[in-house]
Amino acid sequence: MPKSKVRKKSVYTAPAGDRRTPVKVRGGGPSHPIYITVMLGVMIIGLAWLVVNYIAGQQIPFMNDLGNWNFAIGFALMIGGLLMTMKWR
Image (cartoon, rainbow, N blue to C red):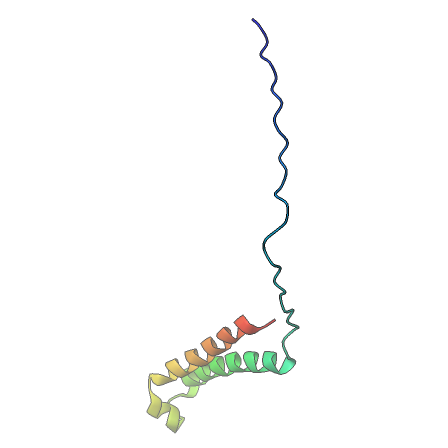
């Protein structure tokens, strides 16, 4: 059986000149320690709100008046702290 001829392929050359303009990314430094403290504090306060509500919510007059809104307040504080983590660097 005869051997097939080998064809030479043309070498790929990249197009000259890149038309895209480079974008400078502003390097953000680390978050301020106060931001981290507030973030963690808000999450801990939310957790403490729920724990106090479970343990002594009936003995504290304003917590007793809030009723089930105590859950909304506690979870809102914790979610607020969690949302702050998205800006944390």
